[in-house]
Length: 394
Length: 172
Image (cartoon, rainbow over all chains, first blue to last red; front, side):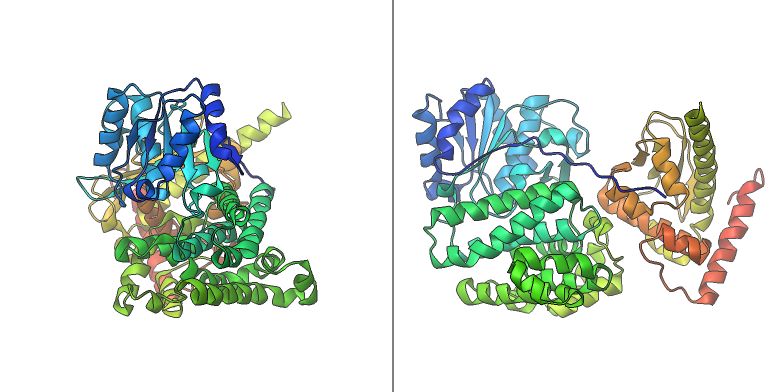
């Protein structure tokens, strides 16, 4: 029989903690860059986060006046081409992305164009099309959830067809991820909760699905523990920089875990719900997670049971018989969701979101079957199974 | 020397299994479940299996309401590339299911992800119908319950088309 085997890859330098932004001039210098283009969106600009970054850069001798802040919520090839042109016109030599998933994905795609040349992003769509390193890319996440700062994927909407173009390559990975607590201090409670549950779901699926490996497991369990130990406290005291940083580190660790072991049914269903109803990704993840774990439980009780250690601690784990730990771990996640509902109104069911209607469920189930995340789900999923999970989550 | 003999044997086995698999996909495309998936592929869409650094492989294309054999020229629209003959052997000899092989990075998939999922469903269905249960449990993540009559009808159709495909000048 064939034995176990895995691959693990994460060349991103993580610069994290107090005054992390002030390390950027040195890190840019190490990569021969002194004229970066900052890409962000209007929300981040309005929150004055760009000002904080600019201050850290200019005080370190780096030019930081070039900013493109017009990235839409649902970024497209049009935005990517416009930013690439702006970059070339101003002879920039690197990119700094400040924002959430959309900004980071856009910056990754811009980096393809400014490094490879031309304006036709379609040429680079698909898996492993890129064959050489790109320009230096620094990513400063302003949410603690997507993990995009350490993933090798960018998804951009084609402005002509409306279809999503996926770019998958090790070369897309940023050079440096900067995690500074100042970047997430102003995140409202609802998004703090939703993005934390996004990170928790990344880590949980990384740990419970078929692509798991010993190294991704270590990142996943550490990320789960950090979310479980800090998200409620951050909602209680939003200005707590140390706990904010813990959530940012959790999101990055979960990102490293799932970009190496992939995700499963929660994401397959969540991607489709997001596409059809425009429900935020983190909300989809939080709603679906316990229902999918219940679906996978018969085949994965031992692995799901191990989640109890990072979720509830070794003492609780030791008190519960092995055969009950899977259910106890799921119950723990349900309790966390109840607390997040109480503190931040984060929905626990699809009906609580107010955005998903029962008659949409068959369509969601059908489309989810074409999502690549299903490959790694430990239990096979057919239309009827997907629909049953959605019905339960409703 | 021993290693060379092992690889030669594995390569011969993979070559045979690729031949069988290619023919099964073509013959099995008359199955009602596969028929339901086929319209989702663009007309002329090509799907290939290959092994990195080797000439082994096969290719099929969607033509109308069937998969048909296709010429191996350039890269297929959807190409599944095994990284080594030994990895293809592990899958072809049912030591690793396709899901586990993918999880273990034994092969990479170049092409549209949604269509690769659709093709996986076709493959799963054909294997569920044609393989004896002890083998299908090794090849698939889970074996679907197919009513006996439906299974016999589908398998008979596939075998008939398989035989037709072996007769020169006869379209499967």
